[in-house]
Length: 610
Image (tube, rainbow, N blue to C red):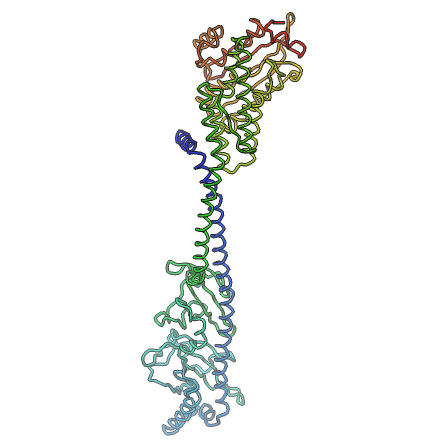
């Protein structure tokens, strides 16, 4: 609470011109900065969305191209049926001499070499035909082993059962080529349709470089990574050869297998696009860091920052000019108020504009004129009455009250609360007009109540939720009259001492008619608060002060003394005020005045009680 109070004091001590400059700059800088950030983010997101939609289409097309090319390799296997010599070798499963075996092996291997290892198929490493426990192999380089690790497919002529080609991974075989190139196998069953028998299985080993020509367009951008994996995450092809054969463990965390999504990869945000093949059980993947996608936004960002700086400079110059325009007349009016505070009522108040500040200056000038007239008129006629009313008027227009009000207006201007500023200045102008517009000593109770309501509204603007008030009128307030400024000194004391000891202060004001069985009736103003209250010794002291000269001194009890003296001078000793208070329970002030109608105003103005 103390920290909050100190912080508020520090803000209040900042000059209004500085607040206005800061306000104008922030009202421009913050929206512009937010707008720039939002536009930049939207632009970046649009690039991400477009790439996220475009890459899967390219992956789908690449998958189709790869499948079409593999389809061509599958069609090569159909040529076996057109070779009678090869078919005869495969059909002949009887025991043969070594010469026949060698001749048959030469025939099949020569056929495989001519069909698969020609210049049209540079990516094929070798072709293997397994038939009746015989292995026919033709390779570009030497190789070692040709068996399945789990022995489930080794030399089985009934594999695969599907009509098309099947994909096998190197992890399933004990087969290596010279220099250890990465490869995959395409398996195709050879069937003797005439005899309805399975003759064997053809295996074609294809170098993974087979995929590069289909993916080169997708790998042109820097830091782009592409790989081909099966549905379990085993990598068949990767732009980094060292990754081939490894397993992508995160495949189970992928939200989809066709499309794009964000994911953290090696500590950076990455856009991953996937495309699942239709014919073969593999998934083509494309990965690119998001920061690489946003490289094109750098120029847009630089232009935005440059324009932003220019706007800030222009806005700052405009804010300085506007702040000087607004605060110059306020500063001048403040200096004049300081002169008035010292008792110099002959100052001249210049009026520079017709806005709210100009209205305030006009009201202040009119107020000073009326004060001078009141001083001159009543100085020789009713010096004591004049002094009491003048001090009451000075209390009303106390420069401290004006300073606090102007500070509150300044804070509202800083927060951009235009309607609140207009309302506060309107209320303040109405209070000043009330102070000087009525020359009569007595005014309708409704006017006095309106004035104290304006005063409380001004204070509520300042203290916000810490202050609340309730006003109830049980009389015809427009019919009966009361002295001016009767309630404000009491309310000032309640606010001053109540908010020192209370977080929340509630003030209740009641205007009621006193009902007596005999004697004249009266009007009662009852002011209650939930402030800290006063002890009995202080109450005794205040009651003694009520009978003292109100001009003698201006201590903490001056407001109450002034009210009591004015009532006593105007209406007689039968009227005045009564104090009631208890520690920590609050204070109640009851002001008693006679019921006065308009016809009787002249009698009371002369000081004779009715």
